Length: 113
Image 1: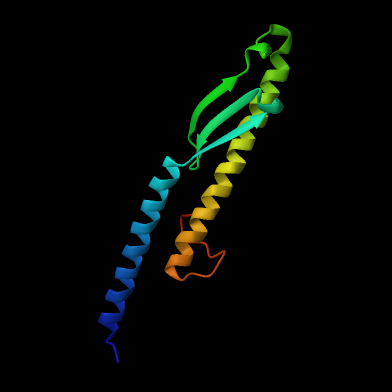
Image 2 (image 1 turned 180 degrees about the vertical axis):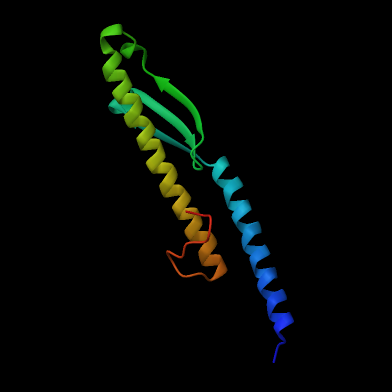
């Protein structure tokens, strides 16, 4: 039978391993790129899977003062599309990491909401 000290050491080692894997995943998410679109591709937003915005592309035909409100709406929609895609990729990657650790699906690690 293991001593209490051995069990505490094992738990600390497991926690360090999980933290290391989570740090690796966060770095990986910043390298994965997603693209949100709206207006049939007239507005595009590129973002990392971690949610960092990398760029915005707006079709030239929308660059008219009378189109301002529509452009703002399309940019908002493209940002939201990119955010949704980033969240899906992030969740997929989290599932892979948790599966590799033997954690149950849907298990929330502290600080990783």
